[in-house]
Image 1 (cartoon, one colour):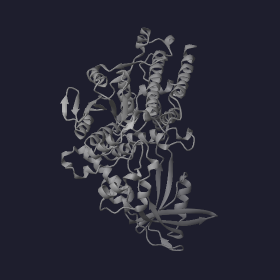
Image 2 (cartoon, helix red, strand yellow; image 1 turned 30 degrees about the vertical axis):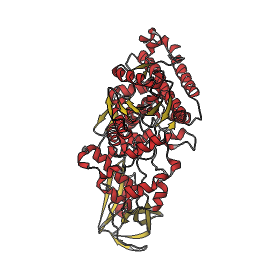
Image 3 (cartoon, helix red, strand yellow; image 1 turned 60 degrees about the vertical axis):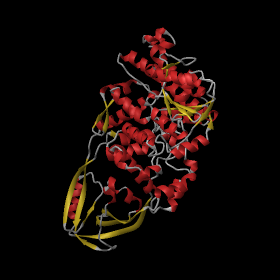
Image 4 (cartoon, one colour; image 1 turned 180 degrees about the vertical axis):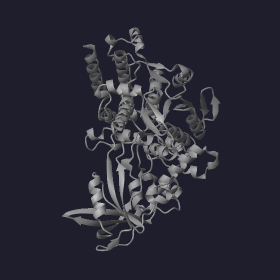
Length: 573
C-alpha cells in the first residue's frame, strides 16, 4: 500500500474519494491500495532556545546570540495525536511509498518533510503536484507523480526561510526587549513591513499643506483651467486681464487603447477584494482556500498571473465558452515560460455547473470576481477617443494656457465584464468639436483656491502592493518579479494579521496605522533588520536556493553575521 499525506483533513477527504480510499478509520482513510491521512497545518515546530540550554529560559544580554549548530524540532502539543498516527503509518511494513500531497508550494513541502524527518521515515517519497482539486486533476496528478528528490531544493529553501525567521525572531526580539525593557517582537519580514507603515504615517504627520490656485474659464458645456499657480496675485491678474473671448491654440485628438489586466495571482486578488469588498488579506485567502477545497477555483497561493499553454483548449472551450475573446490576448495570457510553481487563479470547469446559491455570499463574491477577471483578461482593449484642448492668453511676452481634456469610449472591450465593480474613470467626458483658431466666448470666470494633499494611509490593498514591490530598486535587473518584495503571496496576509495581534499596527476603517508601540520599535531597530531592501534580497536568495542555484548554508551564514555584529554593538556598551 501507499500512504498519502495531505495538509488538511478536508483535502484528504477529497483525494480519498477520488482514489477509492473510502473506508474511514481513526485519523485516516483506507481503500484502493491507499491510506490517506493528513497534517493539521504544521505538526512540527522549531524548538525554543531553552531546548538547547536551560539558561535560555531566562533572557540575558550576555547569552546572545543564540545560533544553534544543529536545529531542534518538536511536535506541536495540540496535534500530537495526529502526528503519532502519521508516524505509525509511515513506519508500517505494509506501506511501500509515501506520497506528499501537501499544498504544492514551499510551505507545503516544509510541513510534509518535517513530519517525515521527525517520524524517522526512510520510505521512498513521491510528490503529488496539482493546481486544482477537481477530480480529473487529482486523477491526472496521481498518474504523473513526481520523484520526491525533485523537490529537495524547494525543501532546502523552506528550511532556510524557517531558520532565518527563527534566528532573527529569537535574537533580535530578545536584544531589543532587554535593552529597552519592553516586550518587542522583531521579524525578518514583519519588521520591514511595519517600517513602511511607520514611514508613511510619519510623512502624513509631517505634511504641511500648501495653498495654490487655478484660473477657471467657463463656457457652454465645458471648462478650461490653468495648471497650478502658487501666487494669488498672478492668477488674479491673469483672470482679470483675460477678456470675454479666448482663442484655441491647439486641439489634439487621438485614439487610446487600454489592454486588459492579467488573471489573478493571490496578491492581486487580495488587493482587489480589499478595494471592492473591504475584505482583509487573510479573509480573502481563507475564502479562496475554501473555494479551492470545494473544487471551485484553482490553487490560490500562486505568484503567477499567467496560464500554461497546455490549458488553452480546455479554457477556451469550457470556461470562456461563447463569449468573444481577443486572440492576441490569448497569446499573452497562455505563456508557460511565465508560470512558476502554479498558474494564475481561475475557475475550474466543474464549478460552472455548481449551484451558486449554496455558496456563502463572501465566497460567491470572490468566485464571481475571479470568473469576471478571466473573461476580462481575454477580452478586447478599451478604446477611447481622447481630446485635449488648449486655449492661450498672451500678455507682455508671457503665454498662459487654459486646458481641458475629454474622452469618449468607442469600444468598451474588456471593461464590460467589470462594470459591476464600478469605475468613474470609464465615464465619458464630452468636449465640443473645436478647431485651432476658433474664438471662444467666455461665460464666466473664477479663481479656485486649492491645497496640496498629504499621502494616504496604507490600506491592505496599497500595503500588499508596496510589499510586493518593496526593495525592487536594490535588486539586479533580470530578477524574477514574482519573487521580489517582502514575504510571498502566501505569507503576506499572515504578516499583516501578526502585526495587528502584537499591537504594532491597528485598523482604522480601511486604513492600517502604526501604534505607539510600533513606532517605538522602528525607532530602535537597526537599519538592516527593518530595511525592505535587505529583506527583498533575502527573498531572492531563497528563490535561488529553491532553484538549486545557491545553498542555505551561505544564506544563513550571512544572516548570522549580521545578527552577531548587531548584538556586539550593544554588548560592548
